[in-house]
Image (cartoon, rainbow, N blue to C red; front, side):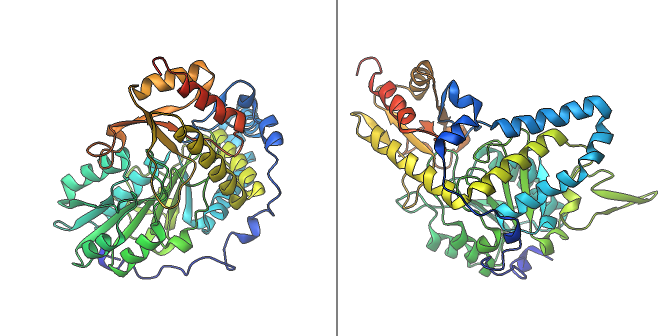
Length: 425
């Protein structure tokens, strides 16, 4: 399939026919105290840096350590064979979370790894013809955008940025206009940016892209695990995410969704004897579907840990988690916004668990240091991470706080107190 025909063959939005519905658990009421008791880090720090790397549960930790011990006792290959059913179950759980078929999901080392392999697969598969355009929104993350730049140097494509409306979300009218010429090969959309807490209308944007015949990649790195993410409802060709953030999985894990019919058009880099078959002295054959993205070598213990984390989220229910995260974040915005000299910068009609702000007269790094002295973890996001949106009429650097469903009002208040007590205020 060429890029111009990529909009054909998308499945209908997932509803009652969700292919992962049988794997979803019935949500139960969220017991914050129990979740904190199951999270060892909650005893030592107020962790409001879940958009960086969230605190893992004891169960996830036990899964990772348990498999590493098994490798040490019986051997790495043998331990992988013994865990083969559980490894397959990880893909099934991730697929259930994002509304996909397990055969459309690969477990990767990171969001960027999945995005890069899919992007180069598109280029090597002939989907990025010279002179065609790539569209990005202003929330694009640095590793994705730099990957687009690198491929464009070889492909001869042009990258255009779609403007935002005043609230910071992508301008759907401008996107429709950009697609009207029919020369757009790829639209790279961001669900939630790393640097502000608004939620982009990616389903609406992807619908326009399908109509315009553009391949659609969705960056769900900051949304999967804190918001419902359904690839059928979005209608994208590729979606990527990470395990370490809102999913509360181990670092070194990620996910890649590739629509089944679309996968056959991609020729990813970095193939090996599991992703392809060396079936002649001067010939190889890529595996079918998303299997061509799955390498032989992988950190099995980490991937099993990701499965434990995802199963826990499915047990809680993503709607329950999303509601709790949104409520905690809005309360934090209210606390911070009530402090003189503090500006909250998230925008958007719909917001999530990322809360970004600045304090007049204080560099964000100083605010982070003050918070850490009070045993509160927050971080700094600066322009190199999101230079299409930060800078100009927006700050170059912001403090990023990202509470999760296990965050308590007391922890949010500790951050607000640390900000209010900055020297010179």
